[in-house]
Structures are given as C-alpha cells and as structure tokens.
View 1 (tube, rainbow, N blue to C red):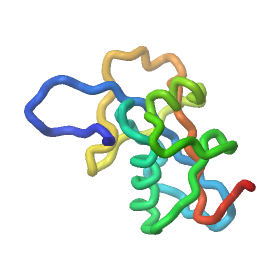
View 2 (tube, helix red, strand yellow):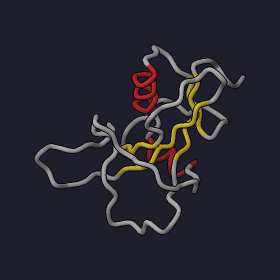
View 3 (cartoon, rainbow, N blue to C red):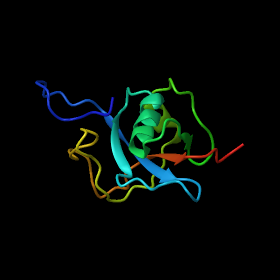
View 4 (cartoon, helix red, strand yellow):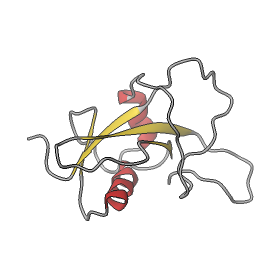
Length: 125
C-alpha cells in the first residue's frame, strides 16, 4: 500500500506525499515525517502505518487538524480534496519501501502534501 522498491515491473504507480504532524503534548514525534503513499491506498493503511511506528494499538488521526475521514477512502482522493502546498525538502522514503526517489517533476515548485495529524489521545471533540 505504500509503494516501494523491488519487484519485476518497471511500471511506477502514482504516489502522493503525506506529512505527519504530532498533535498533543505527549505524542511522540516520528523520525520520518514525510512518506510517499500510493494514491490507491486506503486511509486505514496510513493509520496502521502510524500505529506501527508509534508501537500503539490505536492512534487518533486527523486531516489538517480538523476531522477524521472515512477509513476506506483512497489517499489519492483525500490528497486531491485536502492537500496543501506546504512542501519543502525532507527525506521521503524509508527502509520499509515507503517513499523513494523523486523524478520527473519540477523540484523548484512547492510540493503539495496531505497533512495528517496524529495523537495518542483524542485531540478533538
């Protein structure tokens, strides 16, 4: 669900950049704040990824500090609807195959990202 290297095919699937931001005072910061996620991945996959990184059975996840979308929604659609231009540098990608190299896009433009806020406690009513 998070893209990744390896495999026989040379075909590259379309990905979006997800930026994780901690919400709440005791929420641990992630070492890898930006990841590239397949557009067709479900939001539940993003939630499971954050849960795994934080080693917690449950985390609270919000888009743009506002709401939690349906878990079966595609990340690509959420990116199209709620993505913001808060780009900037920062290594996307990690050893699990999340992310990877750039390629083909004009790096001088601000990259659009989907901001995903996460917390270990409920942050909003």
